[in-house]
Figure: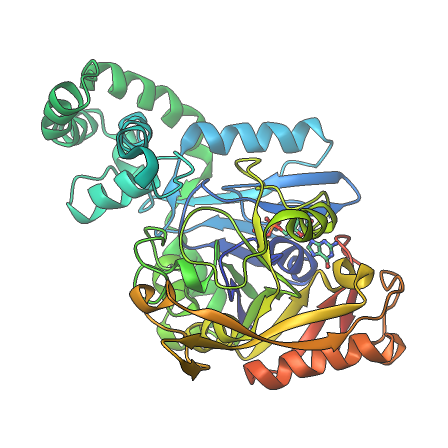
Length: 425
Ligand code: GDP
């Protein structure tokens, strides 16, 4: 097994950071292949607690090469801010490589993201305002700036002028905001480029060589299957593919290189941002779960926004695992449910009087009602358990029922946010 993808089976925040961090110790490379600094991974280790947004989760392992692949939305200032944060917390300078083909999130992308969310008002998508949608729009409009362009002054000015030409009309006339100056932008980009140079290389050649030599590579997904623009809850999706199928594209590896796809899912559901969320809880029930969830309650690692929470959704997770091509599942946050006498589990949806276990397209999903089955709780702490057989019987049954419903073996059960709080099956 040399190439492993760790991806989300749901709406994001499934605990991928912890799973990746645990595996990173035995991986020579950890690669980000999509998205930007619009989501966060929380990892907790000997150095402390980190929210990583853009850096791959292997940065605390000195032997790991952390790669930002061509598919990533790269924001130079965020990149350096995260490196500084690691240094401040005493982490030795990590090995990081940035693809010269990755494209750069420009200040104009962030500005447009903010202006558009403000314009949409109640109809907003819940953007993290990190410029991701305008960035990917530009990429596919062929108006993007590649990292390599930062090192060629004439080309950089030309690219920025092209990128700003139509946007400035929009910024001025539609949003009533002052237009941006391409020369000023070019100067700022040039300053970033000087600092960036030591990190930049042809990561595609680097990874291809590593793969040929059989070195271990971990592909780290951001967000989850249900945020994928093709297979997720469009338009409440993100702007780049969150699927393992895209991981080889965004990283720069052959499509058949992946040996193992670990889909991460929580033992309950959580979701940041807008869109249909069938098992969503409200009131005290929600507050109780939110407060107990994750390592510090269910609040977004990037935005601090309270996450929407609900019971485990086997319909959404089965689908998420299917589109991810999951070969195994890592079930996280099982310890969080230890306070419950009974645990509802969504086993099907009902739409227009019809029961289904297939995850519907967004327009029908909005009408879906959850069908619950109730499992007995275990009401005892499990964070110190390291063997599946040592879990209370009710907790084992809960995991086994989930496995049965989603049809993919649950190989890892996480019982706490720390690295060692993990049960391997
Ligand atoms: P990611 O984006 O998928 O990496 O997920 P996040 O890091 O945003 O959210 C997962 C949250 O759950 C973080 O607060 C983690 O520290 C925490 N976490 C991960 N696994 C466990 C677990 O098994 N138990 C508990 N209590 N927290 C966990």
